[in-house]
Amino acid sequence: MSKLWGGRFAVETDQLVRQFNDSIRFDQRLWREDLDGSTVWARGLARAGVLTDTEAAVLVDGLAQVAAEWETGTFTLQAGDEDIHTANERRLTEIVGDVGGKLHTGRSRNDQVATDFRLWTKRALDQLMTQLQAVQEAMIASAEAHHDVPLPGYTHLQHAQPVTWGHWILSHFWPLTRDAKRLALAHELADECPLGSAALAGTAFPLDRAWLAAELGFTAVSQNSLDAVSNRDFAVEMLYACAMIGVHLSRLSEQIILFSSQEFAFVRLDDAYSTGSSLMPQKKNPDTMELTRGKSGRLIGRLVGMLTMLKGLPSTYDKDMQEDKEPVFDAFDTLMIVLPVMAGAIKTLIINPEKMAAQLEAGLLATDLADYLVKKGLPFRQAHHVVGAVVSLGEQKNVPITDLTLADLQGVSDLFADDVAQAFSIAGSLAARSVTGGTAPAAVLAQITAAKAAV
Ligand code: ARG
Image (cartoon, rainbow, N blue to C red; front, side):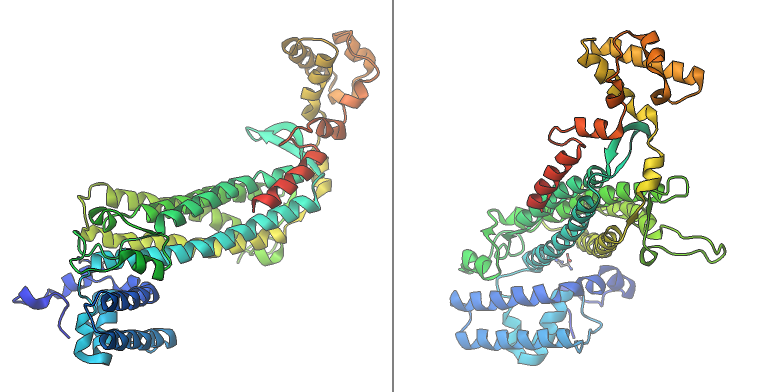
C-alpha cells in the first residue's frame, strides 16, 4: 500500500525514519473520533455538492464497517499505516474501492487530527470529572461521619490549635472543587471545531462549518484557520488541571501517610488499600498513597513537556505537535486509576478518635487563653505576652498549662478568674470558631451542606 503522500518521492522512506515518524502506536486510540469526524466530513461533502449522495452513503457505510472492525478487535494494522488517519482511510478504501479516495477532499490531517483530538479530550474530561466527583463524595461522607471528632491542627507540622476531622478532611475537598473548574475550562476550550481549516488556510470547498461542528457536538467553530490547526491550548489546560489534581492528591497522600504512621496512628488504611513487605511480616505500607504522591511528578512532567514542545513553534501545524497526544493520554490513564483508588481509600479509611484525643495537649489552647484575656479587655499583643509567661510557668513547674492553679495564673495576671476553666476546653475552643469556614462542629455541618452543593 503506497503512502498518502508518496507521489513526489523517488525513494522509499528509511526504515528508521518511518519508525520515528509513525504515530499509529499511540494515536490508534483516536480511532473512534477519527471515524466520527470522517463520517460527518463525508456527509458535509455531499451537502456541499462535492460528492453525490450515493458516494457519501458508500463512504459512511464503509466507515461504519471500519468502526465495527476496531470495535471487535479485528482491524489489522499494516506497515504503511503511519497514523490513525492513514490507517482508517487505507482500510476504508480497501472496503469501498476507489471512492474511498474522495474522502480526503478539501481537508488535511492537520484539521483532522485537531478535530479528533478535541473530540477525544472532551470525552476524557467527562470521565475525569466523574472520577473526581467520586473522590469528593467520599470526602463528604467521611466529614459527615466524623464531623466533630477533634484532633490537633498543625502549622509547620507543629501543634497549633484543635480542629475537627470533618474540617480537616474537607480542607482537601475544596482544592478538588477548584480542579473541577479547571477541567470544565479545558472542556470549554476543547469545545470548538477546527474542521474545515484544512492544512492551514481554510478549505477551498463550500463546506458548512457550523453544520459540521453541530453534527460533531461542538458548540463553536474556530475563527482563524491558521490558529485552529496549531491551537493545543485545550490540551495544555487539561494537563494543567491534571497536574493540579496530582499536586492536591499528593498533599493529601502525604498527610495520610503521616497520620497512618505508628507515631500518629490517627488513621488506618483498610487492608484492601495497603500492601505488605516481602521481608518484614509486621509491615502494612501505605503504597497507594505513596504511589499517588509519586505520580504527581509524572503529571507535572507531562504539563511541562507539552508547554516546552509548543513554545518555539511558528504557526501553524508543525510535526512537533505529534508529541501532543502521549502526555494527554498518559495524564488521563494515570488519573483514571489514581482517582478511583483514592476514592476507595477514603471511603474505607478507619479513623482513630482515641489516638487523636491523646494528642490534644494543653498547648493547643494557648490561643484560647489569650482570647480569654482579650475578652477581659487586654489588648491582644499584651495577652499574647501574658500567655507566653503562663506557658513558661508551666514549663518551670513541669505541668501542662491546664493543670496550673488559679493562684498560679493570677500570679501572672490578675485578669484570670474562675471562668478560665471554660477557655481551657477543647470543646470550647472548637465551638468558639463558628464563623463560616471555621472548625466549630456547627460550622462544619454548614460547610458539608456547601460542599454537597459544590459537587
Ligand atoms: N500524525 C500526525 C499528528 O499526530 C497527524 C497530522 C499530520 N500532519 C502532517 N501534515 N503531517 O500530528
